[in-house]
Image (cartoon, rainbow, N blue to C red):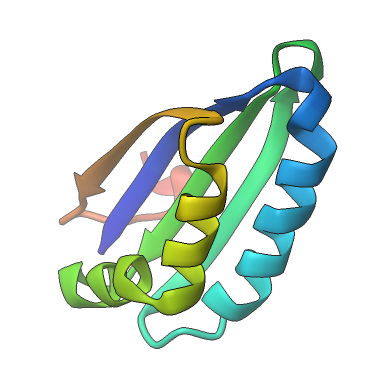
Length: 100
């Protein structure tokens, strides 16, 4: 499983529109083969910052999402107006928090 996590920042004046656009993309993304979860939440409204957390079954599923027309359109629409610090983490020992 892959975990994609990090932050996206936009101009605070654009935050509502960005969040709406991202929510629209989320509807389709959650239906994609290999998507386990796809979420973003406003973290710091005054800074225009969102926290992103995604889980994917494998590299192929994530690559298919990144290559999908609606994902490319979203990135193109916001290119130059968003900044991101998002990382991909490979997991090999998933377990419940209570198993720590």
